[in-house]
Image (tube, rainbow, N blue to C red; front, side, top):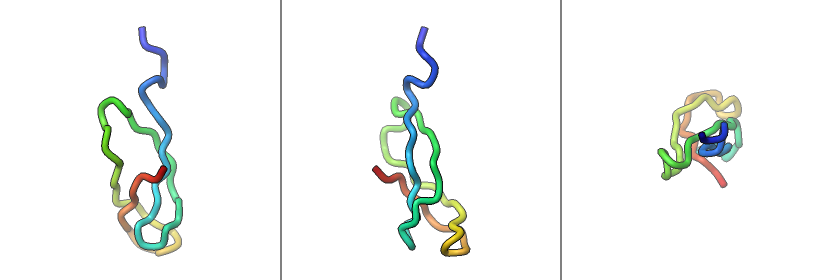
Length: 55
């Protein structure tokens, strides 16, 4: 049996417009090998912007 959380890793999402690190989330590194790109609300920009996974 697999241990809980073994395939998941924590990632930080960074706004592409202002560079602010706003969100932390988890992703399954076995199923999603490429970097996450999500449209999320940025409180500094005060609008929805593209957030990319940072290292």
